Image (cartoon, rainbow, N blue to C red; front, side, top):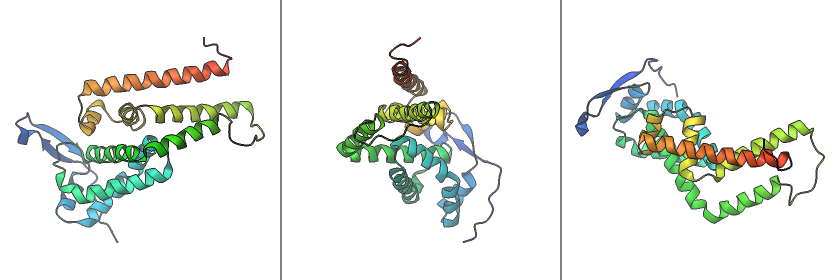
Length: 220
């Protein structure tokens, strides 16, 4: 299917009037596509999917830590968008709405996995620590430390509470602003900042433990 070219400049959306709030202008590069899609243009929706699917997948990988789960939930996200797109009232950027749907889908998947995922993660931790697997020839020390550090960060990220992990991923890894995250999650900006601070502290402590173990328990 040939998809027509879309204007490169963002359309302007005015938000807040319906709720009696002061009007604020939102520059949304997806506004023209969203309008066409909501008017029944399926090609416009396909273009929206192509525009956002990579970043949605990246978010879900960091939330779920598993490629297959991230692919499944990414598909669920866009199917949900297609079914419920009429709910998008253009009071924020479409990308903010997409992240909200993806985040909710990821949290639902984590809850549904329950004990099974906990057991799998426990097994992964044992394997990363060197248990339950045959010994293999060691890589050069620097490479081994780098791989272990990356694994430690990813493991620590996955062990954060869902609300802290999601906020940190959206801010530090996806580059969203405090305001965009607040709108995506439906929480005040102050709560966003607090969660980011708490998540960073938790990761910092985890990495301090890793460095201390590498130095025989001494942290400078």
